[in-house]
Length: 292
Ligand SMILES: *[C@@H]1O[C@H](CO)[C@@H](O)[C@H](O)[C@H]1NC(C)=O
Ligand SMILES: *[C@@H]1O[C@H](CO)[C@@H](O)[C@H](O)[C@H]1NC(C)=O
Image 1 (cartoon, rainbow, N blue to C red):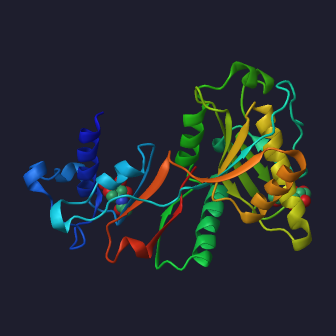
Image 2: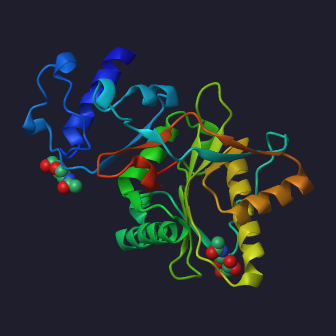
Image 3: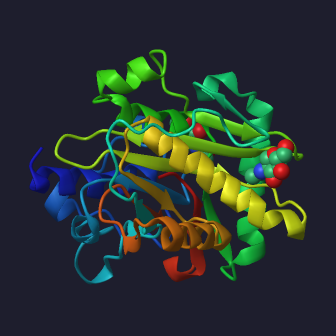
């Protein structure tokens, strides 16, 4: 699809989604002709989120409306990422296959009861509400099975045969520690893209706080789990998004003792962005949830 056509399609999409209001510039008929027909246009959304690899410059070109009254469409929000590059090692070296105490693994999201996913989703929202000063939150449920499955599905295509053989033909994607209520929960997506390092992506992480004395151990265990899975799945780096600071501290500690490199960066692919159609300015709205 050429970028010109994509820009046009995405600009039109705002007019298929956004609730009509004075906040939405009039439809640019000069450029686009007649507006999208109502049967393809629910026009019932106060916001929309876009997750895409097209890049932030492209997002900026997709305005709502044209000319002086035009306003910004999708604005990139979640893009802070941490990457840990494992120290170089013998290819044959495989991490411990046993999980740290308390953790169990599952192949897929469909093995997990939906009530648990809903509980964790709600917790993400409540935590965000406690931490933000934004007036409005635009929420993308991070544990919706569709979102979680998508992240896994987009990453499995090039899984090397040796990795699958080593793991009995399937990768364990979901990890639960139910020593707390609700359990701690982790979703991993090993990704194998041609010409790029094999990367273990932390697709979703929800940690239930433990007592203060146990916190350090909790994060060390979690890092051990990630490290051993990276080794088992032949990944040379681990990537995570909006991770808790104590986990980053535990990684830093590990790096000092064992080598490797920890890098914070702003990611340029699979950027999450929010288009706000409601009253007020987009600056008053914070995007919460989403996916890696
Ligand atoms: C908007 O309309 C679509 C199509 O009818 C429907 O699937 C969706 O649930 C509606 N969304 C809201 C927020 O009402
Ligand atoms: C996992 O469970 C163990 C013991 O069962 C506990 O010590 C540890 O803190 C738990 N970790 C997390 C992240 O919940």
